[in-house]
Image (cartoon, rainbow, N blue to C red; front, side, top):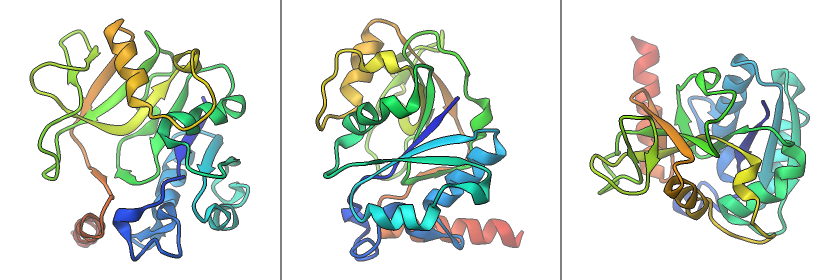
Length: 224
């Protein structure tokens, strides 16, 4: 299975840290956010990774290179302007192939074991859902007792930004900027999205405050 890391965001909420540096290269615990993903992917048995980039993307390519130092083969999907989550994946589909692939947001941090994700799908997508963080008033999707993800329902959870997707999810898409969520919601209506609830470490590193909070948590964990 190949993996894709979404790394084309502007990182506006992380300014001033991202004025001259792309968000995935912002450091936490002594390493760029994206390097934490690369290390976990390598440890989990992945070898082929696609990374999209736009804002200051050349810095990402320079910093990560071919991926050889992590035992990975990194391929890049350059965007002249950010194509949103869906459009970015759609552009990279030729590099990802015809099989399901892992997709992870470049601005999240988690200790989820990537090798635990399903290698095959019972539908078009499998989502990892987490408890709603303090900064969100409500969740994104609900998970029923059959392991299916629904767009509405009680006990809504937050989409972690970690998933396995089938290229068929994008069958009716066209080039350009568009979000991933509407595709997932359409697939949910047909019962084609499965999911799981992960209760381990996860955070969306979307602001300077969250980045600092994660840094403090990791430093405390290492001190124990």
